[in-house]
Structure formats: structure tokens, C-alpha cells
Length: 260
Ligand SMILES: C[S@@+](CC[C@H](N)C(=O)[O-])C[C@H]1O[C@@H](n2cnc3c(N)ncnc32)[C@H](O)[C@@H]1O
Image (spheres, helix red, strand yellow):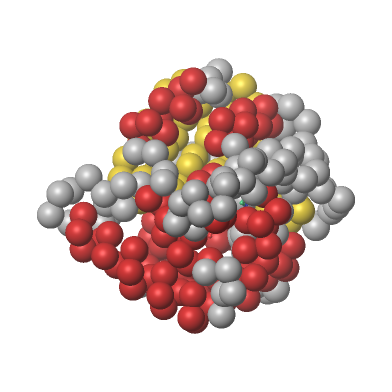
């Protein structure tokens, strides 16, 4: 089953209540509102890949290679890359298992279009315009589901985990690649300074973001649960065989799990 690329229309994410004016100096988008998050990624899409490489010193390519291996995709696997953005994880998986079928879904049309215009020489995923909370796929469709740096931005974490579970076949594997609070004490101030000061200032300027997208991205990482707590939420969905590990330099975690 391979849907047409970039199908629509798309179900929308419901907004959560906004705080009273002046209630906090947090980035306003942290009080999650699906359409604002969608607009934020639409805004930064043109330079998203370039800035990812620049800010990670290309280490994100290595994170992705390590992470997609956790899915154990086979030559005939059907894999979903949810919140695929420009398709980085999907392309990485196809480089490793070229005969697999990969569908990328995202609610930012601009991110999907950037992905659609990428490399013509590599096998490419099918791209679908969809909200991760309302995926346009039947129950038990995929052998594996992966989500890279995406689930942190979905307005309802538990709802997203349930939806990813719904579309997985029994025995199918889930992989989540996401930032995580740094555990090594001496490293923490360095990474926090880089992620909290350098990256937002440079990112906001270089992306030309009017909504301070890179400040939101940094604050959303600081708002994110520890790897242990995320593993508990995955277990509660329920998934089993939940495991996680961090990748160097320790600010990124890969969680993997199996659907019963
Ligand atoms: C930080 S980017 C990550 C993109 C890509 N997975 C990667 O590894 O680079 C987060 C992506 O999640 C998408 N996203 C956030 N919430 C979403 C939702 N509810 N449904 C679909 N996509 C969503 C955004 O549009 C954005 O493309």
C-alpha cells in the first residue's frame, strides 16, 4: 500500500489552552498549539537541513545512521517516518535498505516540499501531508515506525505514542530519536551553553525566523522528559521490550520498543 505523495486534506491538531498574558517568559509556542508549531516549521524549512548540519557539526548524520539500525528493517519492510520533516531519517533508512518501502509524513507542507526537492540520485520515500495525531493509515499497517526530533514538538505526547502504536503491526518496532537532558555532570554546562545561548542566537538570525524558532527549539529540549521518563511513557502506551541508549556527546537518546 503506497499512498500518493503529498496527499491532503489533513486533520488538524487541537490547540491547548494559552496561559494568561505575562504568566511566564517561556517561549509562547511551548504552550503547545499545533497550528503555530506547523507555521514555525513552515518558516524555517528552507534552511532547516543546512542549519542542522552546521549546528551539529554533521554529527546528526551519524546519529541518524545509528538510530535507524534499531528498526532492524528488512528488504521487504514497510516503514513510516513520522514527523519526517525533509526526510532525513527516511533517506538514511533507504540508503541502508534500498528495497524497503518508506513513507514519510509531516504536517508542515514546506518541510515536505524541501524533502521532495532533495537528491534525485537516491531512492526516495513517498511523502504524505498528515498530522501525527491523526495518521491516514489503517491499524497494523507498518513493520516499523520511526520518529526523529519530532515527537517533542507534537502537542500530545501520549496521543502520538498511541497513534504510532495503532499503525504498527503486532511485533512491529518503534524507534524514537530525540534530544535528551545531558547526564554527564561536567559536560552539562558546555552543552547547555551551546544549546541554550549560541544555537538560538545564531539559529534565529541565520534562519531569518520572526517567531524565534531556534529559541523555541532550545526551550522545548529543556522542557522534555528524561530518557527514563520517556521510556516509562512508551511502556505505558503500551509497548514492550522498551530500551534506550544515549549517543555521543550525550544530548541525544534512541528509544526502541516493540508493539505487542
Ligand atoms: C525538528 S523537525 C524533525 C524533522 C526530521 N524528522 C529530522 O529528523 O530532521 C520536527 C518535525 O516535526 C513536525 N511535526 C511536529 N508536530 C507534528 C504533528 N503533530 N504532525 C506532523 N508533523 C509534526 C514538524 O513539522 C517538523 O517537520
